[in-house]
Length: 214
Image (cartoon, rainbow, N blue to C red; front, top):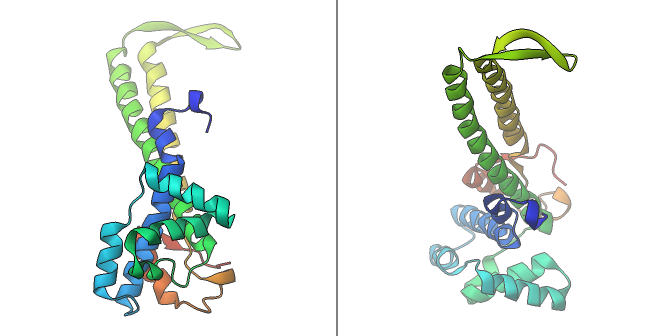
């Protein structure tokens, strides 16, 4: 994102640090699912949850390893596994890179839309307030770029209010559409992970499964 045109809160959502945090959220959700399926011991899961983290030093370490491996996901997995030690071997178990990247991208987009929807809700309150405040304030209506019949300033705000109610619905629909993930292993064949793992992971992340994985 172009920094000078980006509000800080939205910029943070699309930052490299938050991207890696969402990758970690996916990895931990997968570890929890493996634990429920009996593949990862309770103590190992506890250690993974407690010790893994994304801070500025972790981001620096990931970028450092990426120069060595020339593979961003391998660098990420290696960096967070270092934080855990021996039980770090369970992180990324059975996954392919797109399982993490694509599913995490859905989380980032959803977080962005939540911010936009929250701001639109604030705007709706302002528009409604002003529609009532100026309901008797006269102004000139306009048509074809020139003055037309008189109207009220409150009506203008009421029109904007209804327009942004529709815009909010569009954002909510977009949020629903993009809330999809996939945990299906290499080339999406579930050849080395069970479909139950995907169901458990996406339930943890509050995402829907992709109908056809790849």
